[in-house]
Length: 140
Image (cartoon, rainbow, N blue to C red):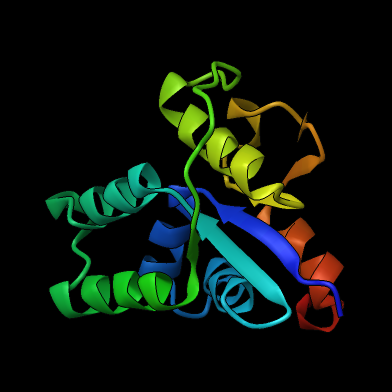
């Protein structure tokens, strides 16, 4: 089976931390389970760590560390080959750079409006769209 190459926006990870029964937690678990492959860059890992630690989110330190370790253990780190300026929010360009370097199939985000619908061969989709593609039986 061909692995599915994925990049996950920080908002998906935050939602996965805040809502254990939510679709985003399922997306995260599917992303780190074969045949899927999660791709990150050092910049994305830094953003994940910094955002999960924001006091206003009130995410327990143990859960934050667990999620970050899970990602470090299962994600493939790639190095972007060139800086991009394609996202509506410049801080989101790092996700397109990762998708570009990983030749990702999907970029999963809760903020589709920040991204083009496609970046080369990477399709930008929501959690619900991702689950309907890879595990439609999980959608109620």
